[in-house]
Length: 114
Image 1 (tube, rainbow, N blue to C red):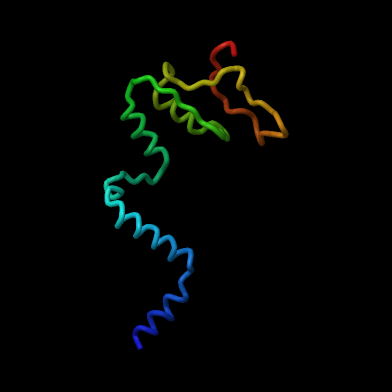
Image 2: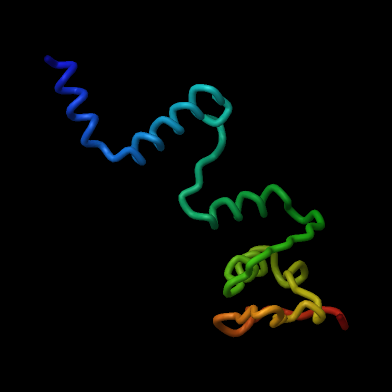
């Protein structure tokens, strides 16, 4: 009787929720090292940790699919002007093959003669 009640209750739960719970269970049980990986609520927390670990070492940062340049601006503020990101003139906001940006290009420093 209890078994049937449990089955009836479980049948009301969204299958996508059960899939996520199962996936989480598999990851935590089969890959215990995941328990020691830091959890970040906001992407800026991850970026701060990355910047702290990189320190003053040289870094080439590439970002594809820049929407409004938020993350690049964030890194520029975090690391300071001397290491601020930029992009070459030759890569300025190309409009090719029907690509039409929804807004102006990100307001970033442009270095080099391109």
